[in-house]
Length: 201
Image (cartoon, rainbow, N blue to C red; front, side, top):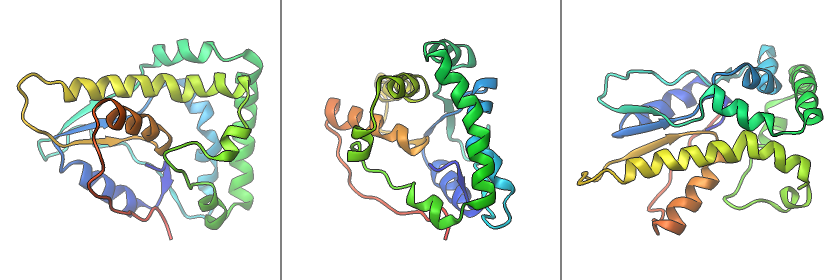
């Protein structure tokens, strides 16, 4: 999932997800995440980009699919966020709106697309840029939430005497690395196919 894109992309993703038996969705409703996500929410006023914020997943689709909120609660995320050094938290609060406004004035779709590429393993740049401070931020925004996602996924996979089911995971792309590690390493699943969806052109 990308959190900024064309509405047709989200329509197709949600239609595909609703064709499954269970959908695991993300989302932390917290003042903290509202501040952090200003880096991409605030750029959407740009007529040049003409992009949209990811709409909420339908809470009760008319397809029989069961929707499961698989993310942390606001209080749980607050505990993880409190472990990030104070100066980093303030830096994120200050930098996020500045980045959002700068992208609103200068970014193009091509510029944004160059930052979207991601493989299932960390890139060389990610490894070189690692630092204890960055690790603390990643632990709160990514790792703690990945752990909860995998927990919820395991619960769905371990239903006693359950029939085989199709489980959709509608999460940001960075979280899928943890999913791939969990299902390929511990359960020895493998990919049988894939389909590309266009976020924007």
